[in-house]
Amino acid sequence: METMLVNKIKNGIVIDHIKAGFGVQLYRYLGLDKADFTVALITNAASEEMGKKDILKIQDKDKNDVDFDVLGLIDPNCTVNIIVGGKIVEKRKLRLPEKVEDVILCKNPRCITSTEKVIPHVFHLHDADEKEYACGYCEEVVKCSEVAAWMR
Image (cartoon, rainbow, N blue to C red; front, side):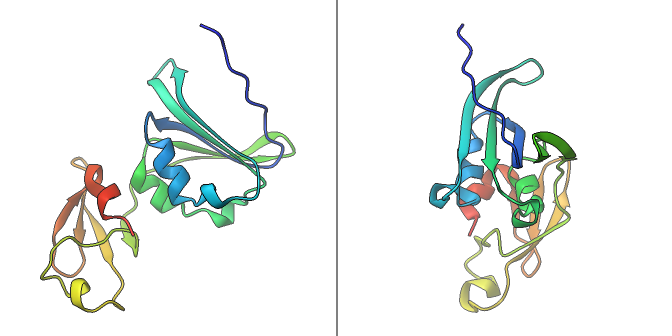
């Protein structure tokens, strides 16, 4: 198998160990399709520990511009590397956030968030082992595997 080379970035963020197939979802969530800076999305890269993985390399993106909780919600197993001067200066292992606000839409038609559009959509981690979140108002439970369909 031939290896594809993707240049190192000098300053920015590398999101690694993304579950294969989730890279496009992260790419869209981060709005990288509208970016005016260099972005590399690598899908199905070989990985010894995962088999296959996706990788996002984002040149000149500041870590303060990224919601790490949402990245942890989409794929809690990915790693975020902050690159400065061509070197990793910070490495973050993501996890499921305890609370997310205005990310997931409640699918319960009787929830107050369905009629009151100004109320924030708040979800709390309900069961970490099952990767489930519960609506803060009606307690409707959503699995992380379903989150993509209910994201704002």
